Length: 77
Image 1 (tube, one colour):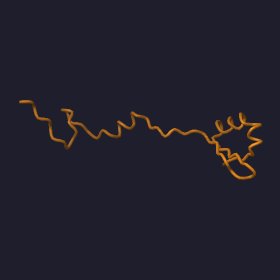
Image 2 (cartoon, rainbow, N blue to C red; image 1 turned 90 degrees about the vertical axis):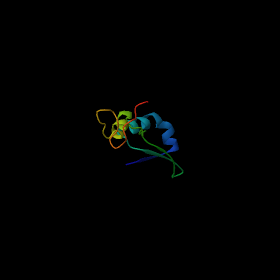
Image 3 (cartoon, helix red, strand yellow; image 1 turned 120 degrees about the vertical axis):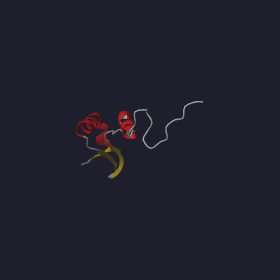
Image 4 (cartoon, helix red, strand yellow; image 1 turned 180 degrees about the vertical axis):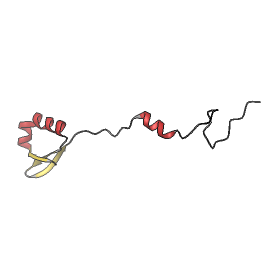
């Protein structure tokens, strides 16, 4: 649920409102003359764990280290 505050109230209580957003995870909408102008919300990273990305990309390898379904490498002549 979002909380709405006027610009004047935000200016007077900015630090307190930032702490509430951080701790409760709820957004705050700052209004100007009753119209919403700015939304303050917790940051959520869109990054994925690099190890999980790599794990999902490996299907299966045979004993020679060649992915299944690919031709085996030719030895140099």
